[in-house]
Image 1: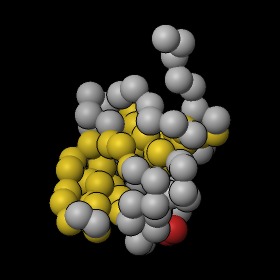
Image 2: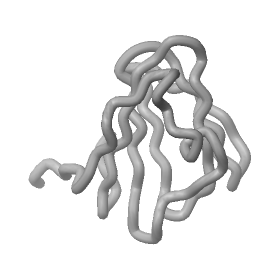
Image 3: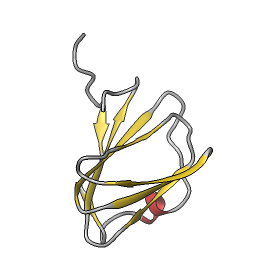
Image 4: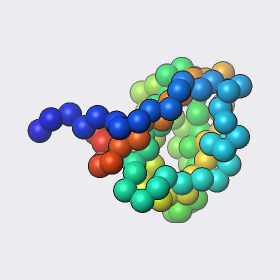
Length: 91
């Protein structure tokens, strides 16, 4: 099976450049999976449906399902990027 590649990626954000839209409730579009990759530091990912939280690290990415409401919160100094897929990605 060939590798599943993202069709788009965000720029790399740090704790200062992380857009307010990502810090507030938002969701991915129908048919879009988001894979949040932390390059340095830690980032808290809060899922709103179903409610849960996970701390993302360089070794622990976060998967957001299509239309799943969520937001992220930097936990100190960090760098992160989101890859978008049109099918479930391999982690």
